[in-house]
Image (cartoon, rainbow, N blue to C red):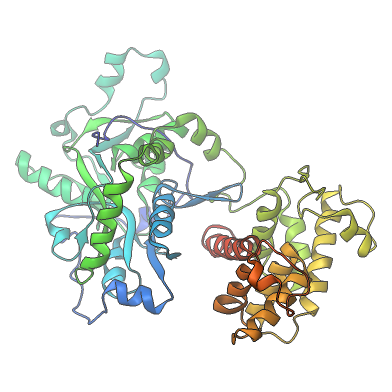
Length: 483
C-alpha cells in the first residue's frame, strides 16, 4: 500500500462555531488525551450484531470527509468504506451519529456501537482502551495557519517569511485543538521534545478539525493542527490557509473496536486485506482526499450538509409530505430513489418526473400535466395516499413499507406476496422477514404459479431493494438534513 501522505484536497465550509472561543482554556499541565472508560460488562460486537438481525451499528462523525450529504447523495470516505464492508459481510448498516468527537471511545465501550468508523490516529495511549484495525491510510499532522492577505502578489520566500516554517518559532502563540484529539497529544509531546511548553488552547469535542480550520481562515484564531489530508480538503475550498509545516511523521489512521470483539476485528482486517487488492480501495481514497475540482463544486453547492437542503424542491416536498403525515425527509428519500430530484427524467417505460408518474396513474387520479414539478409531486402523493388506505389495518411503520413496495411494483403483486406469506406460515401484515421474503419468491416459477399468486411473475428484488434503500437513506437524512 502506498504511503498516503501527499498533499490532498477537498472541503466544504462547515458551520461556523463562534461559541468555541468562549469555551477555550489554556492548558498548563498535561491532561489525558482519552479519559478512562468505566468497566462495564458489554457483550462482544458479534453477539449484538446477531441480536439486531445482522445489523452493524457504526459510530460516525458528521464531517465533509467522513459522512455528509450532497444533492441527496449520502457520501463520505468512512460511509462508503462501511457500505463495502457490510455488503461483503451480508449485514445491514446502521449509522449512529456522535456529536462530541471526544466521546467516541466512551460510546464504543458503553456498547452504543460496534465500531468507531472514523479515521482515528493510532497511538499507544489509545491502544490501552480500544483495538485498532489495520491502517486505512497514513497522514502527518501539520500546522494550519493563514497566508498573508496579499499572498498572491508575493514571492514564495516572502510568504515563508510571514509564516511559521519551524515549530520552534511559534514561541507562545496560542494553538487551538480539541482536548481529546491526537493533535493535543502531539503538541504535548512536541513541547517535551523541544524543551519548552507550547501555548495549547483546548476546545470541546463538538468542534471538529474543519471548524477550527475555518476559524483560522476567517482570522478568528491564528493556529490549529490538522491531519494533512483534512487540511488539504479545506484548502481545496479556500486556499488562504497554509498547511505545509509538518509537526509529526506520518501516522496510521484506522477504525476502532472494543477489546472484547476480536472476531469483528479479524473480519475487518481480513476484508481490508481483500479489498486492498482492488483498485476501488485506492479510488475511494483519491475520490475524497485527492479530488479538488469535484469537491470544490460540492463545497459551494446550495444543497449539502452545510446548508441542510436537499434540492430546489424541498418546500414543495414538505408541503406534500404533510398531506401524508410523513416526515418530509422520508418523502424526499423516495423522490431521490425515483428521479434523483430531476424533474426532466423519463424512464424507458414512459414514467415522468420527480415521482416517475405513469400517464395512466395521472389519469386515474384526474391530473393532466405530470411534466409540471408541483403537479408531479401532487400526483405521486395522491397515489401514495390511495395505496396507504389499502393497508389501514397495519401499524404505521409496516403501512409505510407496504405502501412504498406497492408504489414500486403495484398493489396486485404485494397482495400476492401477502397471500403467499400466509400460505407459507408467515405473517402477511409484517414486511421484514415475512412479506419482504415472499415478494422475492415471486420471481420463481414454483411460487408465482401457485393459486395464491394471481398476478404471475414479479421481479421481487426490485420492491425489496426499493423499500430497503429508501428507508436507509431516510435514516441518513435524519442525521444530515434539517427538519
